[in-house]
Image (cartoon, one colour):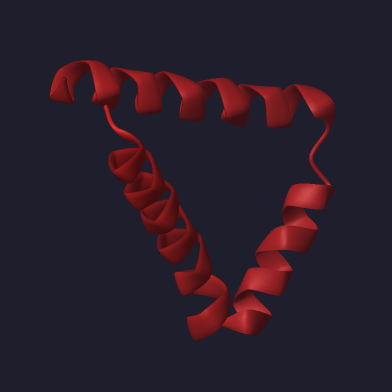
Length: 62
């Protein structure tokens, strides 16, 4: 993987992350306040699920 691929992937993450707050700022704010109410265990669960799915996709694509 070269540095261009890394920066392209980072740019894609930023674009995807910016879509929801751009299209629905009030909905994004409501969702964000709900996330803040989760306890540490719930946040860790979602984090490990995200990591697992991301690593699985990387493994399948490479």
